[in-house]
Length: 288
Length: 280
Image 1 (cartoon, rainbow over the protein chains, first blue to last red):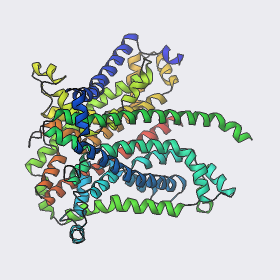
Image 2 (tube, helix red, strand yellow):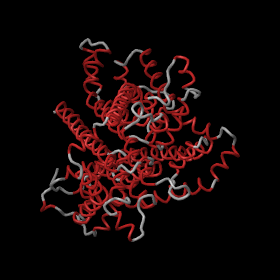
Image 3 (cartoon, chains in turn green, purple):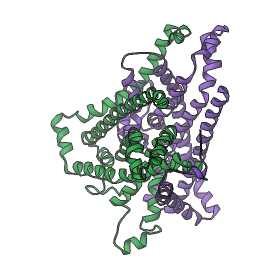
Image 4 (cartoon, each protein chain N blue to C red):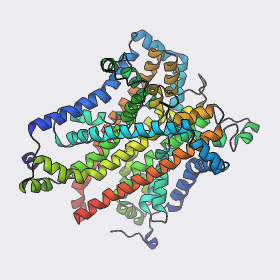
């Protein structure tokens, strides 16, 4: 550390750069965050609470939670399976698979939503069949679930693949050669090792699932009280010049963002501690 | 270290996990993407070209890519300073500030959109102070740059932080001992070392920005030929039941997304291998 100080920048440069960095972040990130809450409370606390107690707002909150609850288990299962296959085995086309998993990050949310319209929309590939069987996907909740799944598809896998690759497979191989069954190995060795990374991925995926706008907007049809998630509800109220209502709903999402940031920091801190503990405890274990 | 021969495959679950991965990936991602290509395939090339290069489409590309490029440049500049300060200088509340950097990833884009539009409007907290100078942000193409810079800010910072942390003190000391001024050390030693990461962060930010929709539509004003981004043009074509037109534009966006993804992979490979080369 002292070595750094010996050839560090002059004091005024350090102060200037720190000032620019903090000023930029404060103005660019801090101010909008504060503005959400101030705008939401602009007409007083009663108006704020009334805006949240509105039945459409409550429905939007419930739908947002419901979609996240459906989407996350699928993507968790996929993330664990993909990470297990990729980090533990060698097979041809592995790097292609890793690239394909990243694909939804590269696709514009609007295009993502559109994909499902092309498949399930009234004039889509399966549209006629769906309408014959009286089953709606587009402009209904199933389409919103699919679009959200697509958007949040890579999150868990992306966290777990590098984590499991760095951990190596020695512990699991030891468990199996000592007679553990596959599930025993998974629950007792793999899962405890990856739990923080898994949680980290789930936190990110959840934030995105609950906050997704573009993809869900394309497939939702904006039917009030039916296919409005909280972000879509924000849009509708804002376009109706109902600023208090829009920012009240937005403040719920901003709170979610803050919870996400705190949870993320805690998990990051736990992961760091765990790696440090692991590094500290590894040498004696090996000599035993 | 690695005993990856098939004969050493002691761990169970390869077939199950890879099978599930491939099925889920196909159902959710690959089949929908092929539906898009299939739909595009129903167009002849001249029809496709006509839609993809219509004046309104061309102007939407200009707005989308121009604003994304400007936003990524802003982020490259400020992101480098932020990452540098976060890694190198101690100051109170650093952990809080470090966590705040991820806000744009956690804050839903619609919330960012309405908030930025409100702050940068002519009577908003920031817009009010810019208006006397004749600078308008909200409801002009400038607003798009602000929104895109907001949502893509974390990419540059998060890509640079670990790389700046990894710079070894000895390298800087050696440069100083050989008589380099601090600025020379930065320009000739540090900057070249972090440049691949900076470029990767820039490209990640750019690629995220070109697809962005939620935050932009609230602040852009959305005037055709002036401040209309390509994703919005796709949506308005969908709303006019012009699925074919929307498909053609979606294919353009998709091709560009693929190119960006490949570029990012190549940049990351370059950054990783340069590092290796320097170490050995």
